[in-house]
Image (cartoon, rainbow, N blue to C red; front, top):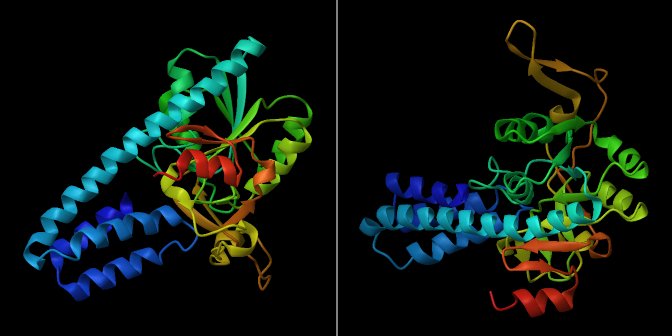
Length: 302
């Protein structure tokens, strides 16, 4: 949605063929790992390219709004299908359902509902008692700063944990399911998401905890078969690892260095979770098994 509106804003200033091409090319490269960003950009490009320059600004704005509206409907559908999984777990357990999530895949990331948080919001509004374990999600701390804030605004009980605590909680029966989002899914069900997701999936598999991925079908990349080999992993700046920013007691946001001067840092933005570790893909069309046959049968017509 952000990429679509980026194209629309650009067309308000310059709507020439050269400007359209430059804008779309730039936005498509902004997040090399996220396929749905490229999907939105190419949808805008296909719509606007045949139009005369004088019509592009209005058409772009209307199309971006349509994409946003569709995003809301898709997220609501993901919420409904995920709610069924949470409700089934609650009916079997008859006590608070504990869900672990990683990074931010709520309404700050997509429109209104989010993807991974949509089932949680739906379950909360349905009156199902639940509690969310929120991974801090180093180094940008999207879980601690964004997901926790979202859940607090909605009134959902939650606890922020360090990234390495998930396995311990699973070992002691304190996680009933994991729900994460995704930036790209291969045609065979491999899932690319925020760095650290793979380790959560390994821990979940070892402890018999269902591991679900909430995904709009726009995140499917039909051209890829092996996510580990084929998905480009974004590498970000070292300072995201070597420095921290936070709110101090005096109300000011400050940035500090936490590593020794001169220490190098590696900062991979994403990792790939093999399909064998995924219990199911929660899509707007329903729950889909993470394998090529099921994905093709249920989603290929899109």
